[in-house]
Length: 488
Image (cartoon, rainbow, N blue to C red; front, side):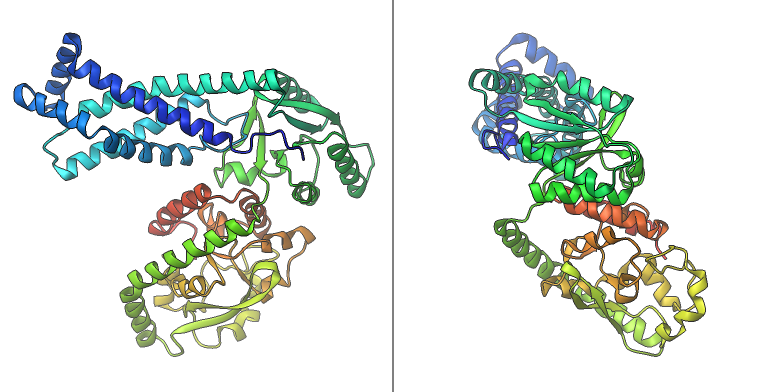
């Protein structure tokens, strides 16, 4: 709501990390090739690793590493930055991390080392730089933390000197948890975060009165962040807070007593303040630039994926056709973005006229209100059971992706029947984004989750949507599909 914030703090972190990597690389070269101690150390290390690089080979390596320094540094930087992003080291304004900065950097560099070693092993490179890369990454851990601390000190100096980049938080809540949060945030003032107003819900006040008071507080104090530590809020009231924050274009952190599925089953990171977990909801990304870029990337990926799996589609179509009577494909109207219906394509996995038999199996529904799921549905064919187990029946939805009706990651589109059974108003919030082939709840239990928790995870995804989160969900989807977790 104010214009003195640095909008792209992650760029400062990116520059700091790159400087740390460059310093680590050239420091390793100096130690390795320009000091007697370093030469002895690397000779011992190479013997331990079973690598012989002495004499003429050592001289060739020196020339190789100096001549190819830009290319090697860019390769390492690209790999590290992707891993850093997946570990939320470029997540912007996450003052209170779920894990310490140093731990994230160490794990990221260790992951990169494993990937590099795997590449060296498979490529059988003559210049087998295992000890070099290991030393660079160890130094990068130390220098990376140092450069990050130096960067934060520089930003803190800028805040104190010029009064820029201060984020003003409104804290709502009472009790021990709210007191703890308020106390910790006071120590974060040098980092640009301060509580400018604290309030609590009045006893007996309605949801509308609570939201109105919160809106007045956020506007009057020009808040940049809402922290809701009010205990006893129902999920519907939490969704009203998120709706307000979306209107004001503010991020929110909310106490997780009613949002446990986000942390416990979806394994999404929570910001912990002295053991008090807060779930972070970002500001929605609704700019036309983001939508256009996303559409281009999705279209290209959809076309390439559809072409790659086309032989498999042919085999599945043949299996469906030969093993049961009826059409190959199952076409059904599903509810998409903004509650607009669209025609979705799947391989048929049930016997003919299965929809006509739904009343006979209604009593076996295992997902509660709002969704219809049966673990051992008698309407499913033998081939259909296999296809469902590994989600192969979903592959024709790639056509929907190419046509622009779906994306790779987004809330799963539900049939009209399930849509009409929504039993709380906030459930419709899951239609605020494009439906997807996979989603957060599909990698957090799939059919084992009830509808209420599915909607919570859909809303969490829509508010925190990013390329990094999409990549995490896609990677977890591969794991879940291969081991058929929660599928029926």
